[in-house]
Image (tube, rainbow, N blue to C red; front, side):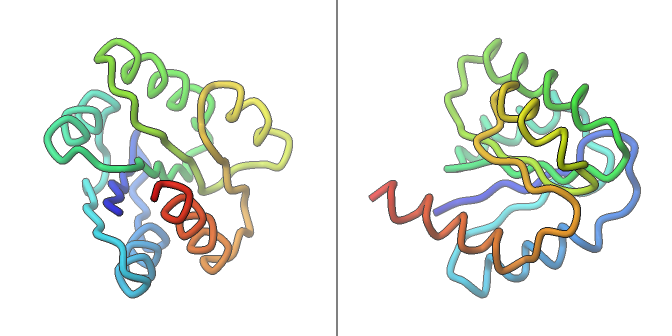
Length: 128
């Protein structure tokens, strides 16, 4: 299963997403990471190029609702039917609105890496 991890927006902190990328690789996933400060359009460009099974957005800046609405719109505009998830500095009360925006799953602040890995493993098993 191929995972594209991305850091949209102006957030300059990527230790957490790098730890997640390493853990996913250790668990047998193919992982690509876009790097810091990518626009939603740049992330969608990478998704078109790499054809991942899932896109993971890591957002710590507090702009998760705005960025996720843009993600939904950009994927729809390009007719990319790629599931996406979001995690980072996400308050519990924003999980439901993020799901309503189209995220397959939203991991709020304090989620353990092991929980994220289990989620991806469940996606992998249900995909085939």
